[in-house]
Length: 238
View 1 (cartoon, helix red, strand yellow):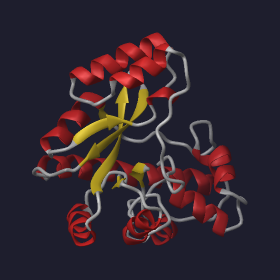
View 2 (cartoon, rainbow, N blue to C red; view 1 turned 60 degrees about the horizontal axis):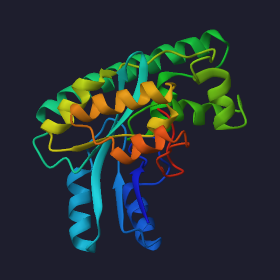
View 3 (cartoon, rainbow, N blue to C red; view 1 turned 90 degrees about the vertical axis):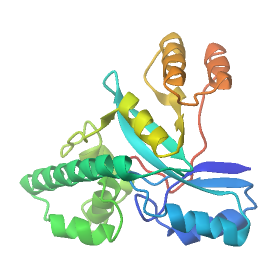
View 4 (spheres, rainbow, N blue to C red; view 1 turned 30 degrees about the vertical axis):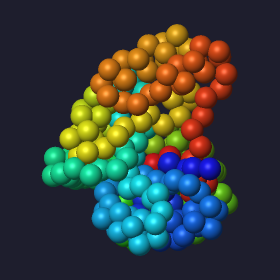
């Protein structure tokens, strides 16, 4: 068994990277990858841990990219090349995320909810701040009872405090990851709002850019079967 889309407390997960890797060993996973949002901060730690524990632990990343006005979740694995260009664009994304968070907080305040940007930063700790941290903060303050309620009422695209996030064009994101030595893959393509015919053409196009949307994916789409990629239960839409 493998799991190639694990998130930690460095982004929107609840466990530290060490806890996640140790749990993977406990579960006897043969391969596993940490793909936190918009950060490569644990790349060297994961590589060192894998050598020490003789485990197939893979450093990775997840980027939210745009293609035809849809968000595409792009995964990059290994990242064994230079990170300079990628880090520059990650700084841009993180800056856009902070601006988005400030707008969400301001809108929540207009709705009469007592939250501040400082509250959100405190809730996130060292992690890349995103909507899950705002959702948890709303739970802590008793505004909502569950994360899902926070997203449904305030943070999803139809929510009262929603603002869109800054995203890279998909082609640029794929090229950036390749330059950083990554193997790329599209996460859960079957959940995209595209007809099977359009999705098949999209996968072929992305493969021509170097994304490893597999031939098996295309065969499944042709058979009209649902297509999903397994992700850890700590995975939350940022």
